[in-house]
Structures are given as C-alpha cells and as structure tokens.
Length: 173
Image 1 (cartoon, helix red, strand yellow):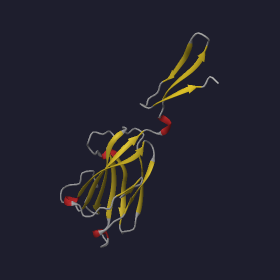
Image 2 (cartoon, rainbow, N blue to C red; image 1 turned 45 degrees about the horizontal axis):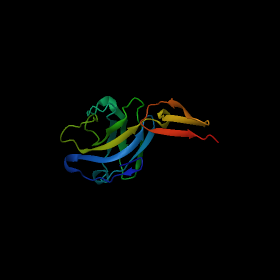
Image 3 (tube, one colour; image 1 turned 120 degrees about the vertical axis):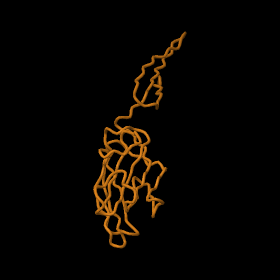
Image 4 (spheres, rainbow, N blue to C red; image 1 turned 180 degrees about the vertical axis):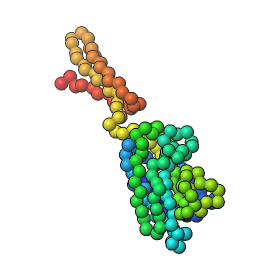
C-alpha cells in the first residue's frame, strides 16, 4: 500500500484486517494514486478484486456510496496503480480510508465483507485539508505616523476562515 508518500507493506493480517494509524495528508478535490501489489495467494495465480472507500462524512460507517475507487483487479505481484479523488464535499479533518481486496467469484465487493471471505481489509487514517485556494488569513495592518506631540496608528483588519494570522507593519519610511 502506497499513498501520498506513505508506504506500508502488509501481509496476512490476523482475521484478514489491518488498522493503520499513521496520518496521511490529502486535500479535498485532489486526485491520488494508490499503489498496490499482491503477494501470497496472488502469486499462486489467484485473481482479486479491489475497492476503496472513504468515510467522507466522518460518521464512522463505510457506506456503499462512499466508494471512491473500484472495482479494480489484482492478478500478479506487480505494482498496480489505482487513482481516486477526494470528493470536494468530504468533511475536513481526520477520517478513514478502507481498502478491500477479495478473491474473485465471492459475490459483490462491499465495504464490510462477510465473515469467511477470502481476502483482506485494511483501514488507513487520512487528514483531509481544504484546497490551498480556500485558505485565507487574518491580516492586521498598522500604519504608524508621528507628529511632534502624539503617535497614532491606523488599523485595518481583513478577516478570514483560518485560525492562522499574519500581522503586517507598514514602514513609515
């Protein structure tokens, strides 16, 4: 499993399940390439289907409508690329991405395969951010002018959506 600089080599996970807690950064609306390679049973010539789900509404339930990729196909140990897009309607913050790999001919692939299915389910933690163009900053500008008796400051503030702030001081020179 490789996504946006994160690499994980998994094997036969206990009960066919893996929970990854490393944080993988992604951006709303961006398209990513998920790289997968088979091993074990896939080496033996078996064919597997792949589907990817994103808990876009962060309700801790993988819904069929949250499939961002699939159904793909793995049949060899060669690295294979699958592309998917983070939906622009997804909530920002920490959420989960589920990769389901099931041996072919086991019925429809779902986010929660039935017990006894031949395959693997892996969950990864994503941190979803808004696109850079939607980031804005609070800027406070101070214009300092001096007279013989007093010092005055003219302050103008521009507010935005982020918590970050920048203060700009205009030089009187």
